[in-house]
Amino acid sequence: NMAVDLANIGRTQEVTGDFSSAEATYREALQIRERLGDAPGAARVRAAIGDVRNQLGALDEAQQHYEAALETLGPEDDPLMFSRLLANLGTLAHKRGNYTGAVDLCRRSLQIKERLGDERGRATVLGNLGNPLAALGRTDEAEASYRAAIALAETLGDAQTLAHQSWNLGCFLEEQGRLAEAVPLVERSVRWCEEVGHVQLAERRSTLDDIRLRLHPGVC
Image (cartoon, rainbow, N blue to C red; front, side, top):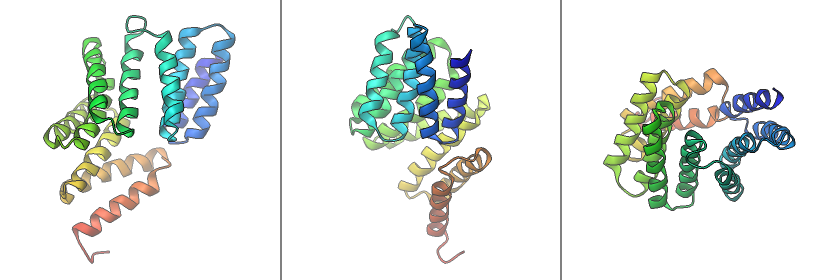
């Protein structure tokens, strides 16, 4: 099925950080879904488009796509996707400074994922939950959430989530002044970026170099 193939290509592009190409691919898949009258399939592709618009900083457009998907997919129609959309709206709330709302949305998503046994999704949302908790100054809870995400990703062998949540925790520890603890976590994220050719590789290498320099001043 062409729409499925396009969605898979889009996911591969998204994983490597090629968000503009991923969006174009997803939009092509959306046209096919809409032409076929496949409303649930179109809603899932809209959610994917929302993800890339979110990554590109187009928060209003991302929210429109997420909300359009939610109108089609209720909590009983596709609870897995519904929980993912709640988590994504939580990410948007965090970016907009609505940290309490972000925590609530992430926790609602987690409840559904726990009920469904979606461990990979739970690892991602646990890490995302750490961000608004940290912004609210609830640092112990934030660190516990990041570490739970990393432990779960390690158990699952989920390299992508492990890399992303290691980055989140590493940046959190850097802000706490715990540089020695941050270094191996950021290194892990950089290694994954190298392996997949992620577009954020240069940025993450630069962050790692900066942390190392602050940890060992004067050492090249």
